[in-house]
Amino acid sequence: MRVKRLSHHAGLIALVTETLQGFKAELFKALAHPARIRILELLRDGERSVTELQQALGTEGSTASQQLAILRMKSLVDTRRSGNNIFYSLRDPQVNALLAVARQIFDAHLVQLQAMSAEEPSSRQQVRAGNRHRRLIRTSRPAA
Image (cartoon, rainbow, N blue to C red; front, side, top):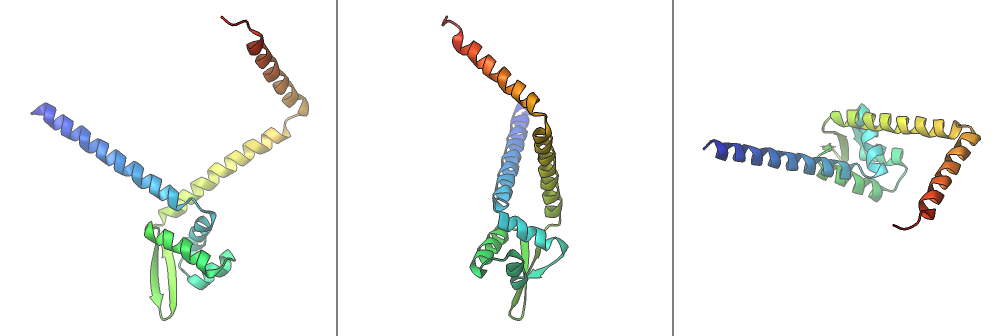
């Protein structure tokens, strides 16, 4: 009986893990377009009308509507109708934290790129020369 319980418990853990990974994959798919990320950033400070979002994005109405529909389907935004206007807002404010972390990762990569570009040319040339030398040694070895 104990083995059965452990097996059942392990199966539940695997199911939860798989479900969580699937959720994360779908979330990142929803974030996989610059316009959708921009919309989420625009909604950071509160709800906005479709017209405001279209103007801020500088895109055609159909483009903004398509991106908003995807965000709605992925449950990242909520809508509210007032007369002829539709307003969008973030469903979960933790999206802001996720976007902030993405910005921190970007900043860290930018700093690394800047540091690499600021290296002395002679250092980069030495690294390249060392790489060429290693390739020559590998290719000049007799076959075993």
